Length: 201
Image (cartoon, rainbow, N blue to C red; front, side, top):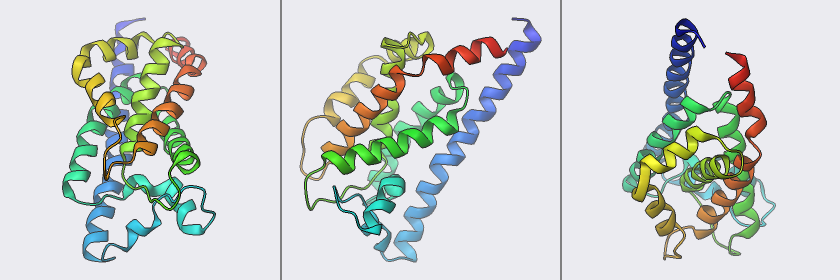
C-alpha cells in the first residue's frame, strides 16, 4: 500500500468516526432532552416489552437506544459508545450498516429473552452488541485490529462486560446479555466484509 493510499484511507476512516458519533450520539442526546422538556417522559414508554406485539414495543426494538431514564444513564452509555464507535469507524468498511444491524439484532434478542411485563430502555444493549462484535470478530473472524483493541483496552474492557452481566435491580440483564450474544454472532461472521477492506485499497 502506497503512502498516498494509506493517507486517503486514514482520512476516510477518521471522517467515518465523526460521522458515527453524529449518527449515534446526537439522536440519543436530542431525544433525551426532547423527552425531558417536550414529551414529559412519554418517549420512554416505547421501550422494549418482551414478546409483546404492540406498536410501542416494536418501536422499542429499533429505537430503545435513544431512551434513557436519567442523565447519568445517558452519560454512562455515551462514554462507552465514544470509545467503541471510534474503533468501529477505524476498522469497519461500512460502519453505519454494521451499527444498524447491531441495533436491530440487540433489540430483537432482548425482545425474545427479556422477562415478561418488563420494559427495557437505553443504549447499553447496543454497547454490549458492539463489544460482542469486536470479540467475535477478533476470536472467530481473525480481525487483528479488534484483537489488538481488546488487548489495549485491557482490564476496563472486560470489567465492563463482567459487571454488565451480573443481574442487578434496575439494570437490563436481557439487553446486556442479548446484545453481547447478537454482537458475537455478527462479529464471528464479519470476516468476508473485512477482507473487502484489504482488497479495496
